[in-house]
Amino acid sequence: MYPDITLKEAAVHGTRKNPLMSIHFTTGPGTGYPDHFFVERHWHPDVELILVRKGVYLCERNLETWQLAEGDLVVINSEELHQLTGNGPDTVHDVVLFSPDLLDFAYLDEWQEKWSRPFLNHELEFPFRLLPGHAAYPRVLELFDRILKAGLEKEEGWYMTCKLGILELFAFMAGQGLLVPPGKTASSSDLRKIAHYKTIAGYIEEHFDEPVTLGQLSEVIPCSPNYLCRFFKEIAGLSPIQYLINCRLERACALLANTTIPILQVSLDCGFENVSYFIRKFKESKGCTPKEFRRKIQEA
Image (cartoon, rainbow, N blue to C red; front, side, top):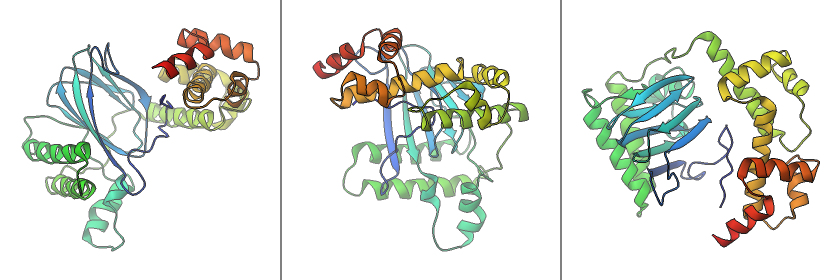
C-alpha cells in the first residue's frame, strides 16, 4: 500500500479501540530508508516517544533543532510540529505513539484534576528530551522497552500491557516532577508562524481536490499573498501552491497504487483539471508517468 503522506498525519496510530502503536525503524540497503531516515515536518494529536538506539539524528520541534545521540529519549507532545532526520544509512530508533486520551477517566479524582486533565488541556507536558545520565532515565527506559515490546509482539493481552505501561510511565514522570508547563522553545513570532502554517496546510489538505488559489489561501488567515508565501516558504522550503501540487501528487500515488481508477479520473479526483499537466507534474516529481508508476507498484 502506497503511503498517504500529509503534513498533518491523517493516519490512525493504532485503532479506535487500541489507540497505540510501537514501531522499529532501521536504515540501510534493503530497508525503506536505504540512504538515511527522514520524516518531513508534520504534526499529530498523538504523543510520540522516540528512543535512539544507534547513530545520530537531527530532531526539529517547533522550528528548533537538536542533535540526538545513542540513548537519547525524546518526547513529541500532542500537536507539536516536528521533523526527524538520520545522519547517514546506519541508524536505528524505536517509536511508541499513543493517544493522550488513554490517560483520561470518567471519575474526577486527584489523578484527573492534578495531572491528566491539565495534560490533555496542554497545561502540562512531558519534557522534550531525557538523557541517559538523568536520575529518572533507567526507570523511564524500562517502561518504554516494556511498552515497545508488547506493542511489537502483540501477544494476547498486549494492549492492556501497553496501556498500563503508559499509565505507569505518566505517573512516574509526574512523581519525578517531570510534567511541567509548556516551555517556550520558539519565539512568539515563530509560534504564530507555526499556527498559520498548520492552518494553511490543513486547509490545503482538506480542499486539495478543489480549485485553490493563492488569493483564497491568503484569506484563510487572513494575510497578504506576499506574507503568506514568505512565511510558508520559510518553514516548508516551498510555496503554498507547490505544497498543494505535492499534496495532490501524493494522493494520486495512493489512488494509482490501490485502485484501478483510470488515469484521467485520478487526475480529476486529485484536483488536476488538465490531465496533460497532471502527467507532466507527476513525471517531474516521481521520475515516471502515472501509468508507469502503477505498473511498478503492481509488479512489486
